[in-house]
Image 1 (cartoon, rainbow, N blue to C red):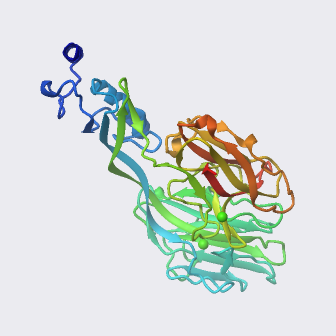
Image 2 (tube, rainbow, N blue to C red; image 1 turned 90 degrees about the horizontal axis):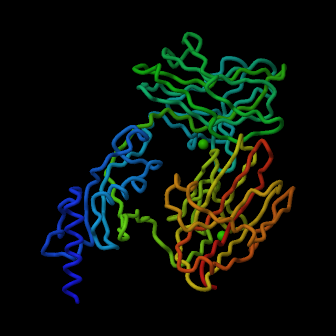
Length: 462
Ligand SMILES: [Ca+2]
Ligand SMILES: [Ca+2]
């Protein structure tokens, strides 16, 4: 009986091999070792890279190997035993930044003193005010306002000279306070001598940037645009932030400037490897993300308040807007928070827990707090097919399990307290590997800006 089976297997394999010439030679696949097919192979990807989408012969985060290599493997290696593993090396391209100038004013001190930084110029040509250092919420930036001046007020904050090459860009963060008139220009010069602003030629590039002007009070310090500097390639440039105001004639808007950066995006191609598993019919990408037995995330660790929440194996992904889940502490407790307050548009931020294998009696629970409620902006979601890649969030299947929890819809004019949101049985996912996600979706302009604070995320058996 055994012998007949062996011969049948051999015959079938031989038929497959002779009907197609794609099956390559690789270690172990010869007559002597049949029918025990190879369990582990290591190969270089030799298929066609989707260069139409990526612009080159490599994979990227948005066009990943997991999309292309399985069908290539299936066309070449189709007669192995199921559970065989292929380790495939391929070229992978990531954009990295070559930074020529970065000023975050971290060393600008003391508070309220004129901004004095090596290589930078702080020049007042009218009135007595200058660009000054300001610190707020642990961040330092430079600020100018003509408020209180007895007349006109003009102040220049000028960068060191930077040699521009093709593809370089200028960005910076800005914030407006108490707007009454546009007082800031962003200027570029190729002949500023470091002394006299009047003898230099300045080109006004302000239109490349949009600094939101709130109806009252202050906006939020954040990115305000990008200027392509390619037309200056081969030249040394100086960038000036020129404030022109008037303390008497209602031109006193406060401008805050931070994170002035001149940089270039460069392609960096490296070798990467992924694993693929054969199921008897086709090859499937093996998600390299670790699978946890349980999760008990208290967020207690050293943090920088307001910095993006980063925790090993958790994904903090911004799909719309620029905001992310950020670290916060209150009364000695650390947690993560999202709010679309003052954001210029739609904000979509996902905070995704590591994969967990669901076993009997497992439950999901977490603590939540709401501040300044004005709309439901938080969803709790579970996926069993999420590939650990930011660009695969949208294509994964997410089940909305929010209704299993009590997410407060108050208070509306202050913050509540962090409290348990209830717990949910994960029985229906038993035996499966899941990702739990907290998805924030809000908008600044349409006032869907509720603040959510999340703490003590638990997936396990209690
Ligand atoms: Ca700063
Ligand atoms: Ca905590």
